[in-house]
Image (cartoon, rainbow, N blue to C red):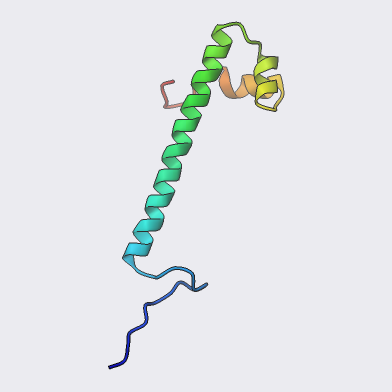
Length: 83
């Protein structure tokens, strides 16, 4: 009896099929969730820093950007999100 070989992705690294696809989708979904949590944490830390008197120049320095870039990114909450 001939043994059936599983199909492989074009590059040959991963098995092709629904389980592989769902595994990859889960990985992307988890990465997206981590990104959202990190963004929310960053927004909260910047808001706390500003509330305690940290300047936009100091925030920018901590984020390795200019004070103008820090102000543009964090001076108003992102659209559609409550922070």
